[in-house]
Image (cartoon, rainbow, N blue to C red; front, side, top):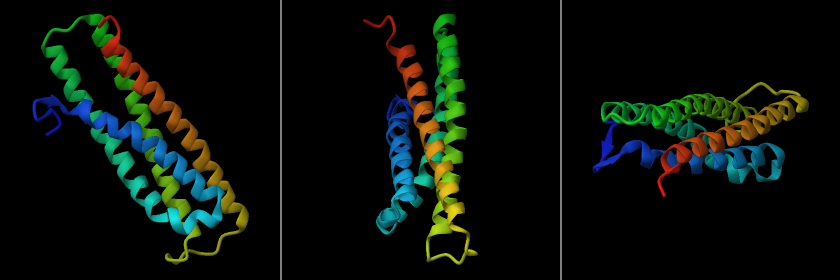
Length: 160
């Protein structure tokens, strides 16, 4: 399931979705928290992205492990495999940041929406949770950049 899709390594296809979804979740979740009047327009998008993005990040790590194993089996150079291992470790970190951002965004949705019965929290609690979402958004965005850059460098270095 995680190895190939239509003859291409699945990882190559899935990572593009992660590179798009993580920053979009970061932006929309932050906007949802920081601009209360936008909340009714952003709530469903944030909810869907908060669930889908960590799932996609997990699929990317699984497909990446399959791709890494295939490259090892084909006897690629130790230098390239070391770069890929570094990329894999950054991908694991990205997964955790993305999962934390998704959970924080869902919590923010739960405490600010009128659709779910939640105990009335003080106003400062919503702003603290918004701060957590913004910090996790920045960390997730940095992590997706570092992970993507290391993956691209391992593929494109010395190619041309």
